[in-house]
Image (cartoon, rainbow, N blue to C red; front, side):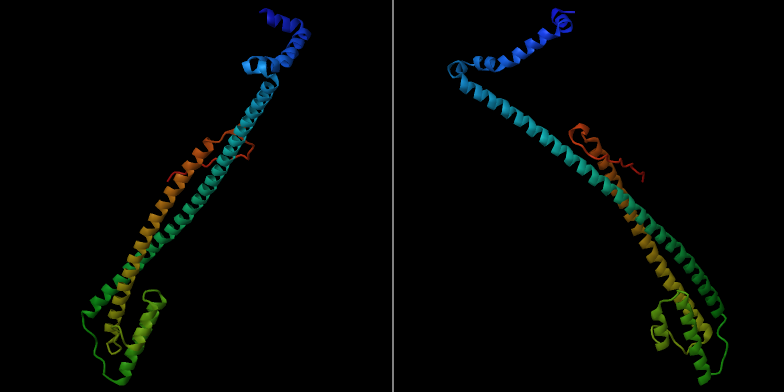
Length: 253
């Protein structure tokens, strides 16, 4: 233990007096340390006081700047966290949209296959020819009613578009009410199979587009989650009083 420490512990009063004297003589020491201070001590003292005040102002400005930067960092971290949360919710919505599109693909595929099977059976039946029927006005009226009923029933099942009913009633777009019911059934089944094939292809294209959107949403979410974690790592706790920022967990794709 040196002499200074022993004096501080055993006789604190003289030590306190010595510190007070040093503080009181500090301005004089500062003034006398410069040659200009000897010639004009009042001016040197004022300049010294101005220097001390400017130093304090610069320190306060630096503290204010650091506090503002820290507050801005906190705001940015909060904004990125909110964006990452919203991106995660968007991924869930796009995932549900893609799942609905995938279900639509399965449904249209099953409907198309069933319609294709009916068309195949109609072709096999039509290969034996059509039964003979008398060519009377009543017969043609019955054939027309049969065509209208078949087309309307197919449209109600979703196997034909609604416009097909109007076309059949008007006798246009390939709908011929004069054909035998066997031939008319073949035409209806073929139209259903072709329409459902187009619907299936459209559903496949929509499912692929939805899956692409899901992938884009996932990449955006992952990027925002990484940015949120990086922003939180830049926070400086002692610089500013701020609310806690919750961490965002990176969700695997």
